Length: 117
Image (cartoon, rainbow, N blue to C red; front, top):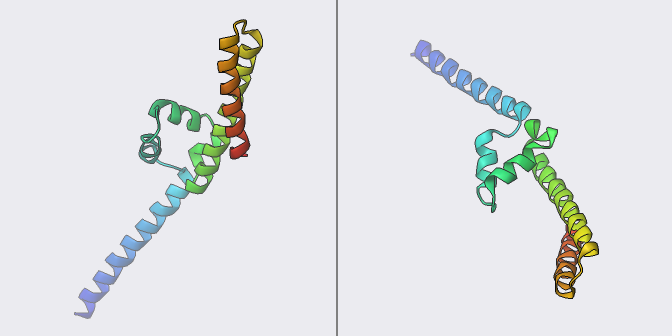
C-alpha cells in the first residue's frame, strides 16, 4: 500500500506541476484569443474591439489587469481621434443645423474624455 500511496503522490504532484507550469505559461503568453473574444463579445463590434486591443503590442503578453489598462488607454485614444474628426467637420460645416449637431457631438466626446482621464 505504501508503494500505491507513493504512486498516487507522484501523480498528484505531477498534475500540480503541470497546472502550475500552464498557469505561468499563460502569464508569459498573455491573454488567450478565446478570452479576448469573450471580452469583446459584449461590445457593439467584436471585430473592432479585437483589432483595437491587438493594435497595442502589449496585448500579446498582457495579463487581465494590464489588458484593462490597455483597454482604457485605447478608449481614450479613440475618443480623442473621434473628437478631432468631429472638430474638423465642425470647422468646415456651413449649415447651422449641422454645426449645432456637431457641437453636441463635440460636447459628448469632451465629457467622455474628461471622465476617462
